[in-house]
Image (tube, rainbow, N blue to C red; front, side):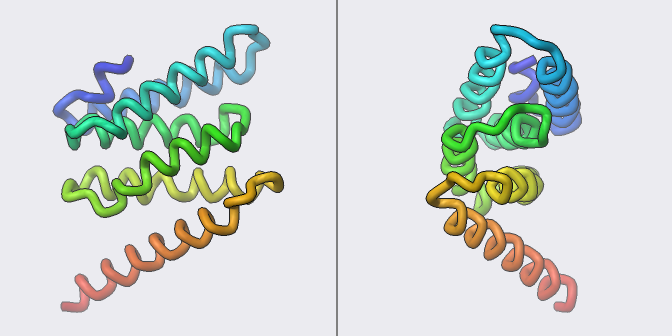
Amino acid sequence: IWPAFRDARAAVRQSAAEALDAVLQIVAERPSAARGGWYAAARGEALTALRSGSAEAVHGGLLAAAALLSGGTPYDGKACEELLEAAWPMGEHRDRAVRLAFVGLLPHVARRLVADAESERRSLHLSRTADHLLATVRGAASASSA
């Protein structure tokens, strides 16, 4: 599935993300000793893609991160923060699909952070997330009025 996250066609990357989300939901429902390995492998692939220079791979990495944080996986605060820190610079990426995927990731991150009473950096991440979403909305509103 991972090469599909780096495909040149956005529709293929989106389909890969939907497939990953479905697989992670199935894995979450079944008791398995290997479950943690599946999540770690998926997180590793997402991080590798986010750290690559290719807009296609970065877009795929953001989609994979959203699938990981969408709810089918058990919460791991450190993993969530690691994904967020790798994804955060993509909010200002030159590629529109990357920026949109980043904005699509933020609600998943916010939901996970709100549920995490243990996170020391929770308020910082929630504040950054809200600020970015508000700036995006304001930018879209000013662009449409111009």
